Amino acid sequence: MSITATIMNTATGQPIQKMVFGRMPKPWVSFNLATGELVTADRVDVGKPAPGKFAVPVSVWVTPKG
Image 1: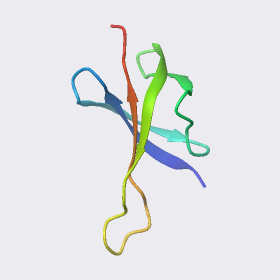
Image 2: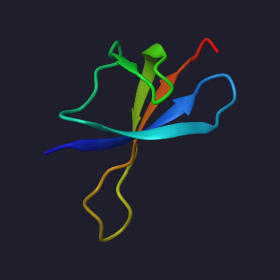
Image 3: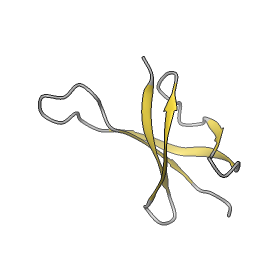
């Protein structure tokens, strides 16, 4: 089962993009953004699903250099 996560900017608190992971991302995961920039996760937040829903909101917080 794949996990769809929202990639968030730690500095601004704004979403950068959505990304699909094959499994739950670890807090130290490194990956490339759509811009090609390599980033490492600062933290991974897992929320509660909305009432009647199964999908859990996942946010991966990163600090982009550029």
